Image (cartoon, rainbow, N blue to C red; front, top):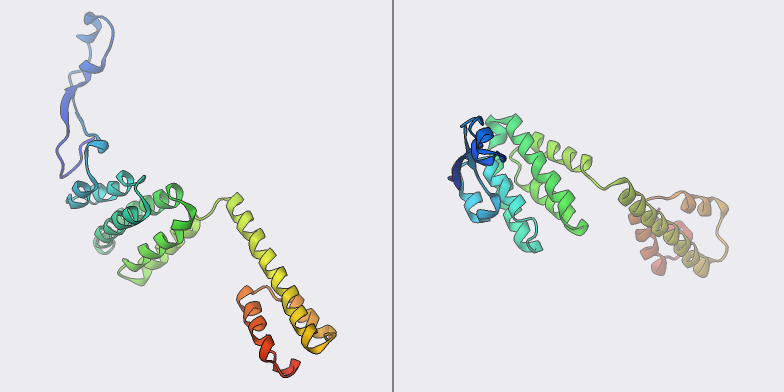
Length: 210
């Protein structure tokens, strides 16, 4: 593979890769092959290269770096790719997909939302932001991860419903059936938490905002 902007390590011929007796090697094509080793390049070299492809490879090179270092390299690569969106849309889309996919599949789960948010910050127009958002959703959690997270969220909602009812019962006694039903139908965790915070200051059930 020939990489634009950084010289290959060495030139070799295809014949040199052919094993076996010398008689067979003499029949091998003499096409030169240019070898280029990513491990021999630093992230700084890759980010400084004029090729967007090499800029993207900087993220691959930094995969095993600690969190802040990877985030810095990822941000620099995304920033360099942003300009492609205006005049090489297809190339921008392919490289952006590569970056997001690599980050979401190779980095720890707790880093992923921040990396997506960082990518959005460098997009120059709403259409690019929408495409990045769509990519991140498509490349989101696996089915097992989604099921696990969904189970956690449902547990938190159920616990918040019970807590809200207990708070209200302690303050006002038995709850009206329609109010208990409304609370039982709530699925928005933020709204439930907001209602729970109201409980200590309520003068009556009529003041409760659900």
